[in-house]
Image 1 (cartoon, one colour):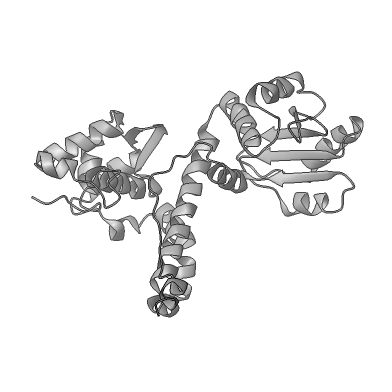
Image 2 (image 1 turned 90 degrees about the horizontal axis):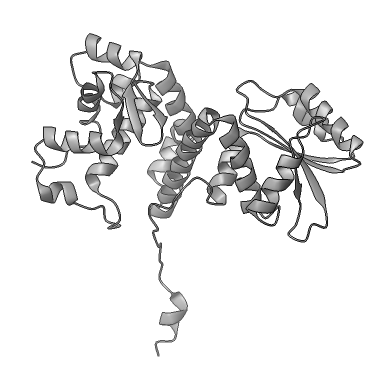
Length: 301
């Protein structure tokens, strides 16, 4: 038979996990291939890029949508399990589970509405968009999905891992000189509202103080004021306040009127910086979009 589309994999994946056991991604993919009786050739079939298998990609997308509806959880990298909501879906709905079915869950509707609002608002315009525009829109939508996934990982990380992640990200962005120097600087502090110190450049000509909060609740103005007070106590004019959550409007307005330069990085900005600097992400595909070289053909005389 042919390889099922990702929606066809949704219910079987839930059923596979229905015993409550946590399974690896690879175990789930192989079990689903067995269930559908896929041949060796079908299991090995690659996407047009030649880098990843069609089967793996479709199961990944099935898991992605089920996870957005909170029917599946992924507590650690590459490990999946069914949630109580997923168990309930199997019990109460014996029919097909697909994208239309998932719309009954508010979490899925909210995610879908956020990611597709721009497309829905200009559906007529998109219908007449040229191929390049369609590619760019699809790429933008995928990037936002990746930001969501990264943000979830950031918020689930241990405090120790979160601290190391902040260091790796800042070093990747050009601060600190290197991981060893940055780690030593960060570990030296931790008092007076300051979590770390890092060099602005590799030569150490200027110093930046860091505050990192792995919170789920918004960071308000009082926390920023405390950080600014700590900066003034150190006679420092530059600071970075980074959080896995977000900043209140009062906090954002407060930093715009400071003499000290304080940069606020919320969870979504942090995730975007991670993508931009290849921290915690890997490149799956590289596509080259080519066009006619008009100058080349103008020389034909």
